[in-house]
Length: 215
View (spheres, rainbow, N blue to C red):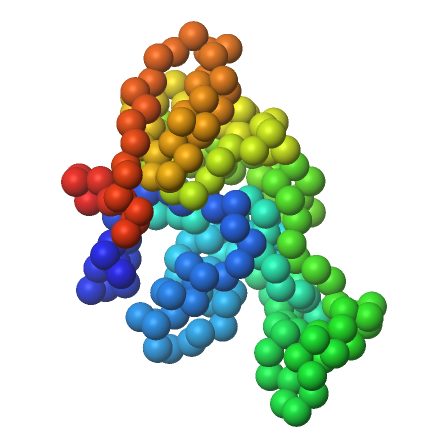
């Protein structure tokens, strides 16, 4: 809400998200009245979703890359076309169950072979494109990186090291997290093989997302 402009655009930036929920998309949908279908919102937001092809433009000023996909399901019975390629339709199996028990309703969907999970962890391969190449293209010229609520866990170390060590212009990392020291240590460990010194500073105010003054 603090970043969005009147024409529904955002400042030039790249958001790397390890979250597989759709909170960003749902928040944005409140500003977008024409259609609230998630793939439409992905197109508007220029989202690269690892597990579902989108009309992603790698060179647009704003982009969001979902490294773990999204916790949805596709239905192979309802195909759509994206970038000239036929893909399954996206469905939501946890809502709209009427009088059925919510979890029973979800289980009935999950047990049918026509549904496929679109959650995929960052270290798993992507069916549709080379994820790391797209990430690198977006972040290689990064000068300032803001870390909000991400701990750089060891399980993601290979992926995180791949792009972080290649940020040759990185000068400053801002960490907004109550566990600042732990995250700083992880970032320093990843950057150590490069021999580069990067300023790492904390933002202790956790009441709202940190926004750089340049925005």
